[in-house]
Image (cartoon, rainbow, N blue to C red; front, side):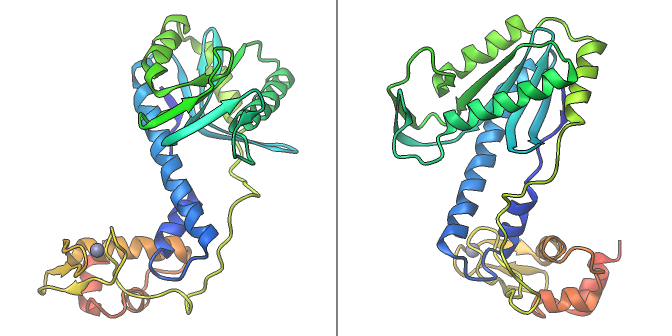
Amino acid sequence: MQIKSRNIPAELRVLESLNGRMAFLPEVDRQLRNMRDGLAGECRLDLALESVSDCVIQISDFTLARNQLCQIDAVLVSANGIYLLDAKNWSGRHTVGDKGFERLTNDPLDQLKRAEKLFCRMLEYERIPLQVLSRLVFVNPEMTLYGVQPEMPIVLPQQLPEFVSEIKRHAGVLTEWEMRVAQRILAKHSEDNPYRLKVDYTWETVGKGMLCTSCRRLLVEKSHKYMWCPVCQVVESKGAALLRTKAEMDVLFPGCKPEVDRLYRFCGGMVSKRGIFKATRN
Ligand SMILES: [Zn+2]
């Protein structure tokens, strides 16, 4: 069971809403792609873990912010131990050796080791007597990793089903005690992340209009009920495009009232104020 489910990270929602509305620096573009890939990988991991949902308690996207930051994609609490899983959605060919992954400045094995250390220190402090097993889980079948040694804390895509079966075999029976342990761990979760990428934008600098979901170009009116993307030829009802655009405005400018006039301006005047009033009055 999950006691903390996976959400789209706030910074990813901001970047997705800004996408197409301003020019991104290359590093922001890269960050957006990495975050999308990362989330897709975490969702793949969640899917693989579905079969153990009755014998472990899952805490997704756990962040322990003490002096250092420790982020774990999935913490699984079972009667016989705690699993810390970091999902990697890499594709292509990669090589790992005694000194870690080649051509990487932030080695995920080092990060995993550091996360485990911080996590174990927290367990010790909390007097939670459970063993911890951490694994880097590669979830994309279109990846080849050279140089993996059996002692490395790595699960390859083809080993994932076996790894999940093993968790199931060793999990034991969940009781109130494990639930209390999981709740105590969850209480240590922090929403703060000082490493969040900041993108500067204001109402004036953000491009207005209703944008296509896939290519993020401006939609054009097809009829009084439908919008249309001249690039991908996608047709969307005006109502759906309007609610989607409203959601983007709410992400970028939270707290401001969803006034009809404001949304009208954010939509670039592509829907009448009357239409906006009708669609958003609930
Ligand atoms: Zn399009």
